[in-house]
Image: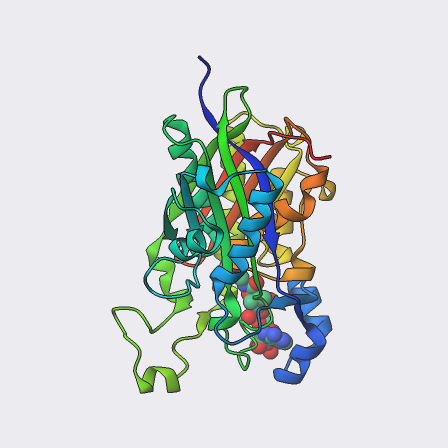
Length: 332
Ligand code: UT7
């Protein structure tokens, strides 16, 4: 029998209604629409409003749409992996909450935190469950309410991030389609340049930590930018080389949406032209774990069965990685 691979068989997504535009940011911090567009490519991001609303509420909508689109009985799902950096709570896992919200009564779940590389690490992990032959329906969610950890007085971060969620279904495929290869990397020495300084076990919350703004995301943008350009481009080139892919073999590049200039550098290194590069950063900004599945959600109708796709990401941690897959269905 041919090898069992994990294929994406459906996509669901959700972005909140509220649009935080560059014009509104101009009223909050010293910035300009022109600076944000030329330095990042972002025009607006979505923000989840409402008391008591967390990451799980966006993921719930994305997973419900996924179940409906794939005509899946929630009781048949074996496992849900929630990739998030902004869980509803430190514990229990947000994945557990999502399962309860959507009626996945026979599934187990847990969260994964690999920051902006989360969805790639999540797919690389979840596909192993399918490849064993033991699990038949696995959901991978990428979701973040980044607005919950953003300081809207810090122009180094508030212009970039947004909220959103999307989810994919993974099922076994023996026709040679699905996830073919993955590369995942971490370098914890980069932790100091992008992260949240307090709120965890090293620095539990105190009045002082709150007053100092240490629960907000902190980023040394230019340093992160340099590492992102180098590593995201390299890992995408590595996965192409390892799988003997030329630029003309690649139909789609699905890059993490952090900064249009990082995306352009990755595409250039891979030699793929603009028409193959999936991009929605102008509308959603950087939704962290949400970026790559939201690309799949937005562009699904253009993908054809058998298309070669390369995903690549870089994020806090530092983390970075790439996935090579063959798209497994046509959407009508
Ligand atoms: O997804 C997870 C990983 N994260 C990333 O990949 C993000 C990587 N970093 C970036 O995308 C970019 O570094 C930023 C968009 C965050 C910043 O862009 P940059 O081109 O690296 O700007 P910079 O931090 O080097 O600052 C350049 C100048 C500075 O002014 P001076 O010192 O040259 O006078 C900043 O003070 O731009 C200024 N600046 C701003 N001006 C207007 C920084 N942020 C802003 C702003 N509006 N929002």
